Image (cartoon, rainbow, N blue to C red):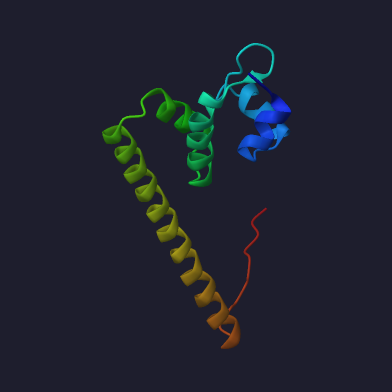
Length: 116
């Protein structure tokens, strides 16, 4: 059994982050803040999913069913989510570029009709 500080050094994850993972239910110590080497793979899974921008409920779900098929499905959903976000951001970029063009050609006319 390792104390939290020892586990932190072993995994290169800060004590503060380990406390956070315990608080949100992603990692469960054995006893009062004691960990075992067998928990390192679980922590690596958590960190990998976090780095891939998975949200806490998504990480919990993945940890609950860590099968090849389920994990691939979740990864493909994350790709689709990110592609959709990129598409929205690209549309916004185009709007900004159009606005810049309007400003440069002095075609931007900001008039507001106020009705009382």
